[in-house]
Image 1 (cartoon, helix red, strand yellow):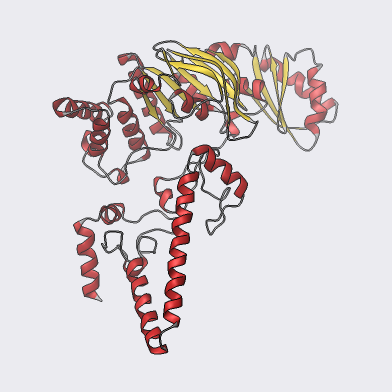
Image 2 (image 1 turned 90 degrees about the horizontal axis):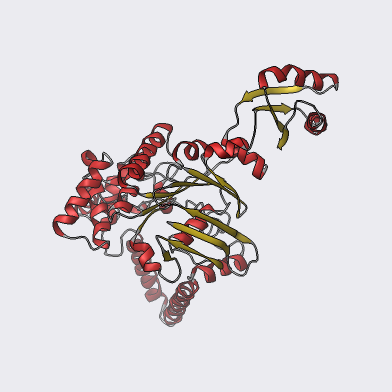
Length: 466
């Protein structure tokens, strides 16, 4: 169903490979988990396979269609759920599904039937006509997946589908993925950094790190590469370096792996070995802080092939409203926002890097157009200032007063001259947002953004009170 051959992706003019010679195949009806930390190349690979990004070299095909030469046919047979939700928070669940259904050219009774089916399948019927801003994270994610299934795709791409969800929501979403695969035969390409997710859902797992595919196999096959029990040891100071050579030469040790300030040693019988292990270290004046005995897990496999533990990986999740309050993104290659790229005033910290990003993403022309408009506006302001200086002082004072009134008026209205809620502060004052930037009243805010009648009425009431 999916074939990837020597896939390479470099961003801009950089020689660094975000995806470095990746090759694998996924069979029809298989659930394949792409496991790796943030920045490993998971999302980049998914974007290439979904035709959202062109590879630097190599080739890939989905459902028998080349992603570069037959991109439209690929898009017809896939569904894609990105890391960041694609739903409109100021529409209802039903409205979101209906909008996407129209984009897939569904009409009439068929459109209604598909929308109702998805709402029922994901247990969203009761909240179908409620605004999505009030949905929980799990409900929003289920709606995301529902929009990707409206056209009944052969392949479903899920990019970090449970990122930021609570434990119960994650388990619920796993059940839906299993049902989709079992009941409809949908092939699932799942990118994740959650080990338990890959272990429980996937038929096979591919581990990627620093753009390179390390190993592919079933969860059991990957764990079997580490024979025996796993003993994790932590130490103080430089005792880790002292302990490693002792353990590597011990008769009971099959393999020793280093992870930050701790060691993992693999043995045939962990329970019988611990006493000998502690005795060996104690005889050499090495104090052990903690000892943990366990059967090999996917985390042990990941440590073996990457030298780091997935349990210590942290992914940043921005709330849905962060795009209006200065929040950043997770994808370091494509997002020009957040402290990494801009100063507090919005200026670029690294102009050269920003210019490279703009050229790569195809937004350089739009930026140039914005700069041209800003320059024209500045010229007009300069001309107006020159004209003002030619008038007498009384006229100049009147003009300044009028200009001030115009500026105040413009700041308190939207583009269609509808008043913004919150009076003089607009949608940035304490009346509409909490200290962390989250909206206090999403529905009222939505009405304002839509230019609804309720926003007008609210504004008139406030004006009357004043």
